[in-house]
Image (cartoon, rainbow over all chains, first blue to last red; front, top):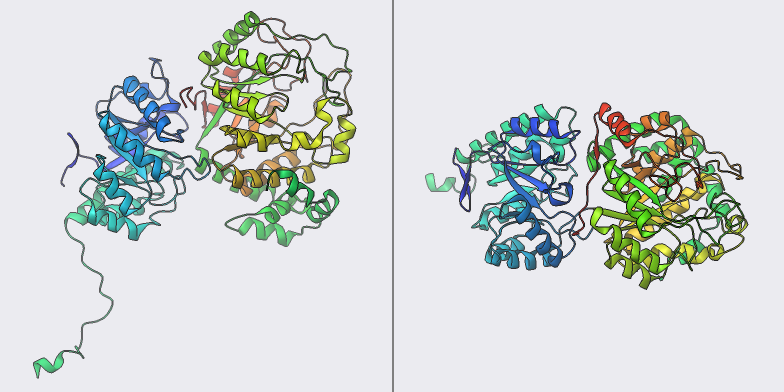
Length: 256
Length: 369
């Protein structure tokens, strides 16, 4: 299978993961290891980067884990830029998952603030992966201001509802010149496989793994589903056919 | 709409109470089976009819809470700064007419307390006072916030209601969350329990979350004090309040607490008892009604209750709490607001949480936010 390239990094695994909601940092590490994930997002607010013994960070030391700090908790572009700079310094990476959700109930991203922040952060040398609505125009605008990838949502974050935005995701994938990572809402391995089948470059999964009663096996299931979906996409899916091709009432006269 | 008072005035206590108690098994089943639950469903879930559905409610609440919050419980510690108070509240150890020695912590004392609380592992703190505007007013709070801001990632306050400008000042100094409980939404009864002091102004207190919302605070905590009036009706009004605030101040987060009256020296016996079973029902009902609201439980509750509530919908907890000013380092075991029930240390609570397959979260905010 083709490797995924984002900026200067290439990834064997197209499954990106999160670090929240696990019952312990040890279990998180075990699940993420099995998932094969090479890009792991970490909320700046959850870690203390100055603490050598920080529970989450000390379980993400393995070399395959590239950290993707996120700005969860910020409500404006200004706050996001500030948080991003601290994250870069603390976690020593210029990769950033930009999340601006002023609405703490459904955690839906603010498109206007996100675009402003993405533009500014790119100028400041960040590799910005913005979490946004499945809005094809916004994705193009993000591309124009220099986003390294776009991360449209499949359905509200943490909802496990799957690809409610499917039609828009397909337009985004068709039009995008940067990698498309389907983030948020992926509830089951079949959702992840579906996202990969339609041509998403990667998916980001957290809740569905962390909250499962067996996170380690669920991580493995997602790994396999993402691989299967990608393989199917590369092998070109057969188109569904809704009718038998027995006769050609419109054109059979041509054969007479 | 300018404040919740307008909605409050459209709802009569007696009518609401009657409608809760009139809910039937069918209403409860309908509420359990709906996808989105509104205020009528909430009424059914807190009604006596829901009693026999408690196990179903608990299973759903468990599942919804895990989906949103994961297998985690956030930890916080209260720090009492002062027990001076100009109010008479019939149920409170700090009440003006209660003969206890009064104390307000100095800068040096606060820092000594902070040191002990930090050593317990805490990074989220809740500051608590009585209401004594002359000595423990805006300037005192501003000073305290500047003093402790470097030591904590998240600072909450449970003090007297303030005006919008004062809240804005404090938020700019690092205040993240304000808890303000209405105590009871029964207006006449409220007057009986708060006969003297600024707190006797029911509407000013009722409009406090509106002032907080306008001041753009990050999080507002609501609740009623159970034991004063019918807990079901008080909870219904709390839920109405929550629903109103969420729609109006949509950038703010909300939490609910469930204080039950606890004994204190010279105190009042609960007028209306709320059993453990009642409280479990209420916690589950809130979760089914609102999947995103944070639900908090304090050391007022017993060990056994707290051990068993972890999986049922609660998202945050205190442990090792002292409810008197200086209780951690300066003056243990005196001048308390109320007696706590669960005296286990934060480490013991963490171990209990872990044993249930949950993680105790000490840091989930950052002072840069």
